[in-house]
Image (cartoon, rainbow, N blue to C red; front, top):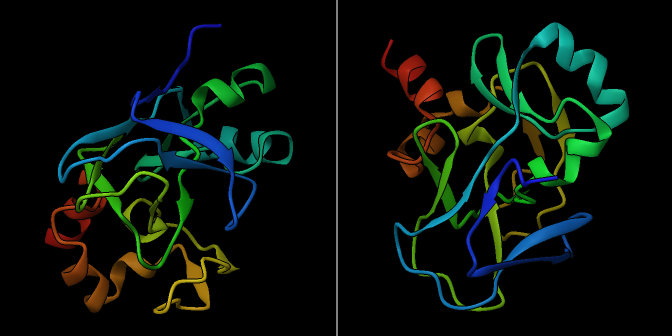
Length: 166
């Protein structure tokens, strides 16, 4: 199967100390450089709720009731970008599905984004990112926090950036 997502040749996927598999810099990545582009199928929330028990969390929200994600177990790995959550991320978004470096990233660093940059839902889960500034719990409404809006200005998905401007 042809990959549904793009991962930069400067990255590699391996076991993560945060959770499961993670995306790591194989060589230095410069500020603004593209590290991943999320691919998959466009589905609504109703379909997503049916897929989650089989596929886990594999989506990126792109509109109020639209998500990009795999639709089958066979598509899951080729759709994943393997970016774990961190409260101290080093990648963010340009547009809806393009992930870029927020700073220079050294070889060996795990590439992470704060789910506050992409998620708008009612979820909440314990955070295990190990960052010094860890929030302890991450929610689907963290994008509404003024300190995160300021910190990640220019790196939110365009979907959430539009909501902030409204």
